[in-house]
Length: 111
Image (cartoon, rainbow, N blue to C red; front, side, top):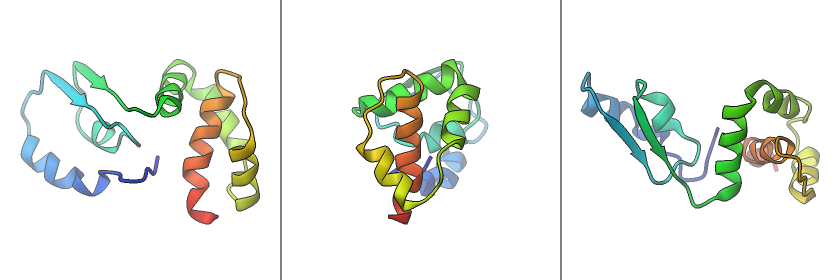
């Protein structure tokens, strides 16, 4: 997921610094698009945080029902009209709301 202030550009340097070390726990206070967490080898324990409650809800929904969220996101067209429709909506469904969060983030560059 693209995220404003994303750390994806840091991933090669972090991989170099971490190397083959066994990291017992990963702590991420600013999860955002999760590029660092997802770009490093698996951890036995990970503490993922962010102040954006909607983003955390999206990741929880993806963890719980990845196929359902993916289908909901796939229903959305990647264009500016859909971006504004999704942004104006306020779904309460546990999976539609995170799907909309994902869609807003990933269509934001085409406004």
